[in-house]
Image 1 (cartoon, one colour):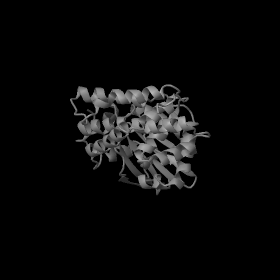
Image 2 (image 1 turned 90 degrees about the vertical axis):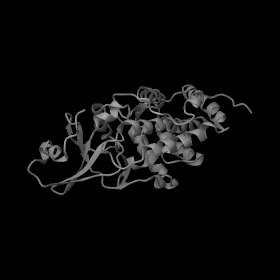
Image 3 (image 1 turned 60 degrees about the vertical axis):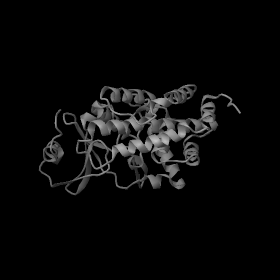
Length: 312
């Protein structure tokens, strides 16, 4: 497999940086790719070097698609794109001046309206060139685990019928597909002077907007009240069905991303992608998913999202 070029080599491949004063540092926080801050004549940029092994393992969209979606997202809430190095592959983007959010901050009720606004801006922008479905991704990652003999969490397949019931309920009244990020952990939000911006389009694709909200809720460990607040801020009329839809996608997010971390740990843990315990994260997500899948109240969510009358 082709090795990622050295940072010295990469800096020489950006035509506008040649002959200028350049300083760089590795940025922490990326779970898959190689991210650098590069100051050129004291002007900061971000160099995002995409790791082809990530998409090859089913953990992201192809690099050329991620770059194309990054360019499209720059029209709304993404960072500006200055240079594309398709042969690396890598992209030079705007360094957004602001504050990277954390999970605790994303759980603050007063910031949820800004998050909802950022999502609406992205979703109203130009459509991406690919689609994304969380249940199709689950099937894909299950296949990766089977092909590579990666161990699944205890009880994972035992709850497949419940996951199928969630997918069926959500398919009853699908929302129009919009360009979605699909991986909105808190650190992908940057609070700037002109609102919250969104970075890192590794799993982006056109999708149900309720998944975007449910995924935020899953990544930031929202309780039902916070998930409902996010739904209410995003949708003009967040009725019971829409709120249930967000909650069900919150469950689906934890179910599927359990496998994402399982695969990352099993196939890419030897790569120098930062100190992160992928196995522990998989266990944590599966623990949350199990609790939700076994909750007696799940049936009411299924009924509400599908428009059926729940059994008493």
